[in-house]
Figure 1 (cartoon, rainbow, N blue to C red):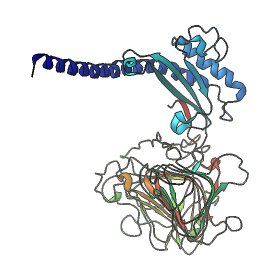
Figure 2 (tube, one colour):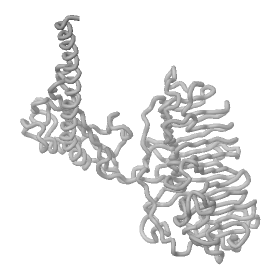
Figure 3 (cartoon, rainbow, N blue to C red):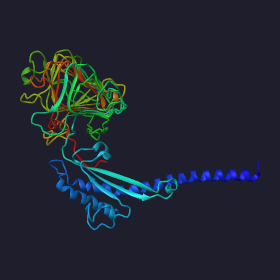
Figure 4 (cartoon, rainbow, N blue to C red):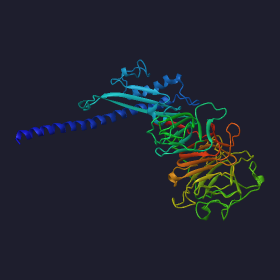
Length: 533
């Protein structure tokens, strides 16, 4: 080989290496510059969205179109404060304000209400406003590779919600599993607005991606199945069913709008935290005059039908409103901490729950054919309660059967079940004894930070009569609802679930119809203020 041939090859290799190095430089310098631009934009849209959210009405939770100019002016002001639109002379998104002509890089400022798809889980929801800023900038090295400009888009979403509830009745948060939401049996699950309620709500949301390779969209065929409908007689009636992946059924079994490929949503109650309690104090009693539960020792084993922690019965006269007096022994329970949980037996006990919060600190609730109702002092049925299921803070978990978080089993095919969620306008002892309740609307809360992880279950079995209202929240758990009584939602609604279920997965079915009236007044209302995205 001649020496000049070698030199020629070196030149070719060097030229190729330079192209690669320039490409790397383009990525590092231009992408790094894009990050700086994005930070500058974020400094503008964050306060801009907060300022625009001030114009969301506190009563309606909506941004009136008449207030849009004010919201836009607020966002424009903060964009100008961060050196965008230097030629603007007014705070508006028109004319001499924040328009592309008044920015050297033709920036585009948008105030979007309700937020669009760029806002992710907040898309389309009242109570939120979105501010978007997009700017085109020349690249340094990118033009060598064929792209002379780069577009940088940044958005922010701010909330001004005062007591708005989530519009969904059923939410499955699991992002991947097949049959993350399942309907089965021979009855109809009917979700519809409660009498007198006019508005959005009662939707079904399934986050799982299972079956997202469906052939025909919005068809609910027999492929995949993030939402699975088993049983040829099962029918789901709901205003709208959103499935991120696909729906699987045996035929036309959904009445309402089906949207396969829908966006996923986040956990709407993800920031909810229960207050700590003093474990050195005694827990609640297993009925009036009964044994006291405690965080340590044999009295942490839970209330049960036998042994030292046996249920303590009261006269039937002390339990007005109790179903089937004489058939069961009435057990009056007061709000408080129950270490070791509740162990129900076979058709002997009727637990009467006074209004307030029942903290099940380990052990869970084991159900038999006994009956449970929440009953007010005057015999009103049901009275507002919350069952909060978690660990005994002093137990070594996992490992302790009575000290660690257990499943919740409520009801049976032979027993009645009447419970309703807390009222935000009334105290909820032991957390509050005066004023309102910060957990108003919640009826069952399975602590997602508990030791069970994703294996915990809430099992609700309907018997001759079933009535539950409020929000059931199990962010890492499974909720199983089984209806057994023959019912008709229009003529004879004896299996009524006026509930919102937000859980990792859920399974609903049975031999009878389940009536699920959507009434946001009965559900938990998370208030959101400030920057959320």
